[in-house]
Length: 505
Image (cartoon, rainbow, N blue to C red; front, top):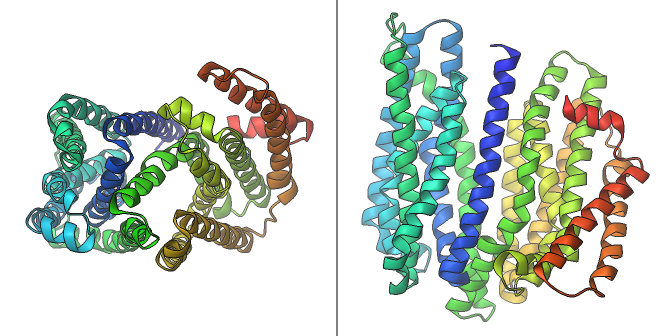
């Protein structure tokens, strides 16, 4: 596998990730305007269940097929590649049919008893049809990733997002006027349509590729051997992701239920939940899309440096990753903290979410930093440690949700999230030190960007008080705070020529 192929594949997947995140963000803005905060709350109750089914049926298989396909390709065992894919498809489709059947026939019980929200039952029945297509498409995408044909999985991701929006736009006038439960069905139809079209795209490309590339060799492994190879890799991967996904799902189910014990009505609790998870969080997470390319490129760098014990390269890579992530995360946090109501007004047309976005701004740096730190730990092969810290983080969140939300409302969840991220980040930084003996430069990586961000934010906060409020004025102020932030970073010595050259490389 040539270095150019790896770089090209990384760029393609990174570009696709950026595009899908941007499309996904505008998709959520459209959904908010279509069904409101309560409708987004119902929709956000459905999505964790959908992601849990993905964890069970697809998450481990995609990575497994990719790795096994790459291995068999290196051995020129083309017949084994097809056998592994077919065996994986059989396993995932079987699991998907079982889960889809449960979701379809037990939707009423599940919605009323577990979620305590009967309005989601119809949506779950429709969602059940997406699961087999989702799992099958994930297997074939893993196959193409193993072959280093990254363009096909990349296009399928973008296609899925586009089809979602088109399907919702075409069906909204029929479903939305009938009530929020039907509005959720409209959103789920978008999911089903996206999964079906994405599957058809990768499947047709697989058929075309198979016809073009005639397999001469017969499989050298039996069906039983292929089954064992798949299970030995897929089961541990799936188990860890299912546990993490299950805990995350539990968090999302509990939030609206515990908000009702705080004194909110069912409608108010669902609206608050929708504002938090469907409106404010997507805003906070949007800038993190720009971390993807750097994180993807730095992971193999530290992996290679660790393998050959190049301490200088490890130190440079860790420093570069943490500094870049800190600069981006603190910059984003400053914008959200200084302009919370203005950002909400620009995006959603109203500023009611301002207080919630202001509180989330303080979580933003820790959230972004943990994304990068997890990338570094992955490069060091510390997958088990990442899983353990994720479990600890989820348990802390669930404890705050269950015990403190009834007393303090949604703010208790935000405090719990902040505490869990802080603890996870400190544990992860210590783990990086134990693995590499590289000491984190807290002054350059954290203190200086924080000072630059505070200075830029205070200057522009004063300016905004004397201006005439308008969307254009707010956009200019946000641009100005970022320019000032970059200037102060340069004055403090954070943005040096060496850093920019490292990022470019």
